[in-house]
Length: 135
Image (cartoon, helix red, strand yellow):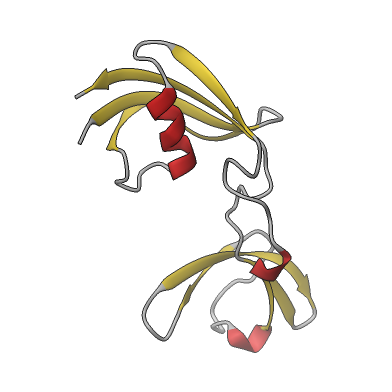
């Protein structure tokens, strides 16, 4: 499989920076999990040595935000020593040992609403990439 060495910046459509590998390039293979598949598709379409910007709508980037991914839980469902605050990421384990991360979206008394959508779900993004090497 091909290995890519790239510089990239991922931003919200409004320009707010989300992630970048500009000072230190990212080396990865398609499908190794370092980049989301929507960003891997952009890399596959990019030209070696050219700085290119891909504008992705929410549905083609990290998906739409779904109401079903918001779960309301009780404060007692969380460990006593966990500091519950808005936008905090919380990891949950399933009985089978899988892990899911959600972000606290709302705190209303003892009711805590957790958002299990991807953090960029519903957001249009700009992905700027420059392929430095393909091996």
